[in-house]
Amino acid sequence: MKYQKSSQVTGAWVKAGELKNGIKAKIVSATAPQPSQFLDQKGNPKTQDVAKVRFESQPEAMNVSLNRATINGLVDAFGDDSKDWQGHFLRVETEKMRVAGKAVVALYLIPDGYIKTDDQNGYAIIVKDQPQNDPEIGGHIEDDIPVINPEDIPF
Image (cartoon, rainbow, N blue to C red):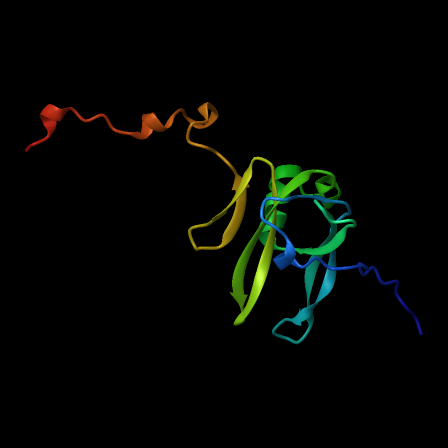
């Protein structure tokens, strides 16, 4: 019988509910797809993207399943090779939510200069923060406020 080498990540898994918003974290391994405990519609295991992450105030790196919003933010900030995601300080943000009726805590790892927000459909996304006062994106908040002449008001 032939066997294939398993590349499963070993070690402890992070409990997102025990992390505080705003603490710093660093990815310390390449991210690799792993089978998850959840099944797809055909009964096959879904995959999850797992990396080792070191959290501020934690003695050792923990396994983290990176969600799609986190991965997209990391790709935007550091490129599409997960090896390039390592060593950067990331901000932890957690969010309580329900998945299939069960209360869970989602974990987001956000690069410096990025924010977590919702897209037009209500899905969480991580995007570059572009404050309205940033001259690189078109000026100042005051530029967007129309000037009204009091004499033009009809009452």
